[in-house]
Image (cartoon, rainbow, N blue to C red; front, side, top):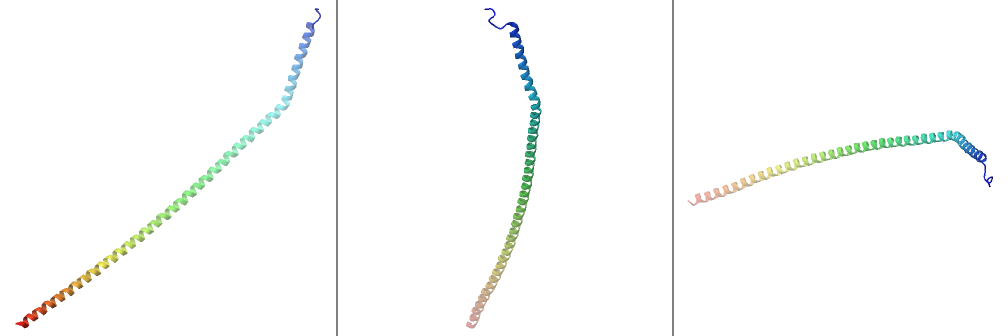
Length: 146
């Protein structure tokens, strides 16, 4: 029964064949990788370049958006300044109108006061004249009685 299993030389040749088959398989994969690896490297470089291009495009779009927003904010600030200046001018105009109206009303009040004072003086003069006339009439009646 000693001859039942493979002999040492058969086992060694089988192991050598297996090693060479594995080595051939690795070489086949390596050669396939060598031809495919250049393609994969090129593909990776293309992917990286495309990614960098997209990043640069996004940065540029963001910069344009920021610039547009800045211009819009500046335009809004300028419009706000103009609106505030218009409001201030309107306030000044209204204040001037109110001042003119106040001056006019003060002049009217002063004229009315002066007119009333003149009427009072005239009325007082009429009363004095009437009083003097009554006094003179009374004196005349007294002098006729004597």
